[in-house]
Image 1 (cartoon, helix red, strand yellow):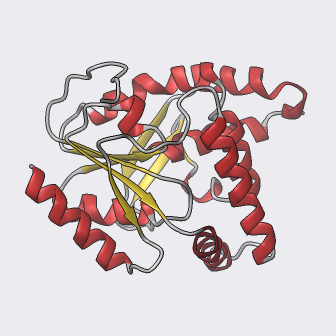
Image 2 (image 1 turned 45 degrees about the vertical axis):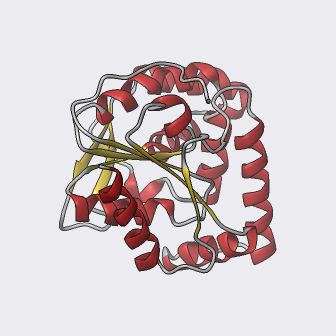
Length: 236
């Protein structure tokens, strides 16, 4: 049996959804949260926000670790819902809406590097747990079911082939109007990020032993959400 790091007191059901980038995790979680009336906590957006703020600093590459730790310990991060905007679940840093600024390839790679820093993860762990403990919450990320909420009521691990994930990421970048790289470049970025996320010393990306694994390669978004909703209802 997988050893839990800590038992976290919860006010209501907590759903943990983990998996690598490009599996449809964020989109499925948003829709699932809306349908079930749960709070959606996008933990990846927290690390992206830290990464973005680090890149804004002068010469952050000189000491990325110190910059990231300083930002993580001093910034006030929160989620707010804005129904008139897309996505409606917005992330704010010190009152500034960063939602539309944190999905670039540069921020993505910086977020991956930042997320491997133990002090950054420690600074954000308490925030993630507080957000989840508000009750009826769905948290998505890389280590929700293994570290943040090892005693979550239902755990999922979403996966998909690298080619399918690269294709989805490329479509996302093109839709956002970004100067999209080639398919091979996107694929290489995903492989590199997977390697970094799964081999880092602190809270690596991995499937919890009691998580339900779902391969989304050949599934539509509707099928993914319907499957997860059915399993949640059965277990709760």
